[in-house]
Image (cartoon, rainbow, N blue to C red):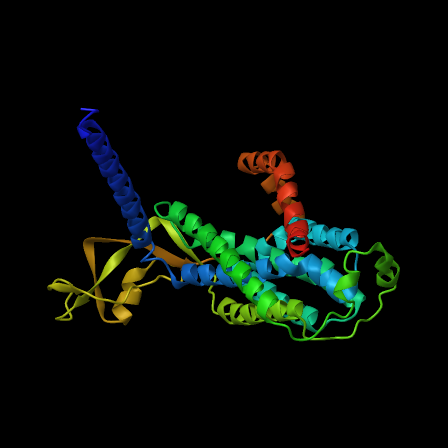
Length: 367
């Protein structure tokens, strides 16, 4: 068989059929996952859109952050890297500090505040020439805006899904983040290679020289020019602009994972006992009283007692109201939080390495 090649052909055929079955299985899982999200509230898709827009704005700025500090403000590699690292660390610190505020305000209000603040901060950075304003934005306003964005969206994904589709929804959430990062990279490259407008206020030859630290420490003001770095920041401003409009359309709702709402059916004869025809309009219990029949009757819709829909009930969500100490103490006592904290500590060193690469690799590749 080896001489004739029949054995190899048989093995190749088996491997091909196995691979085809594997691809078909994965395709079925993905399609079924998207089908499970069809009945989700519109807030889930708005969260995905916000995730993409914010990811692009974040990663496009992150790729040129240290370059922007050196080219536009004459900072050395060490000083630019220190500010870059402080920016990332402060996002975590502000996230811990504002965690209780998020619980009290709710997802919708936090998204509006976060994306509005992010838009104003990025717009300020675009026009900024003063180092003091730069430091206020990068070490104050921007980390605060960042911690009211992505982390709050994560909470929103949990509230907009149920136990059946939550795993796929979170997976898609992180895929969209990677897509935003993937889009940011080529666009940054295109602007860097083809856009030659403006000029560097400090001069490219001075980038990374420690002699510039004395001038940088004085908070001197550079001359504004529409450089490549500012054009990239402007693209993030545009993305943030659209994100603000989306954020203001988000409602404070929650999907009840335990309760299933009845299937709304149209009563053609005005009598609930008569034949019922399914309606295309879902009945959402946004009042939170669980009385779907009253809402249905107001719309002239009958409700079948024995028909159940796979769509979960959507209700208004009331944010937790409590003191900072009470919320923090309850969180610390939760076993899942302690496990999560342990995982974060174990992966901290790996995260530090990646963070270091984010700050140094762009300069290394350009040089």
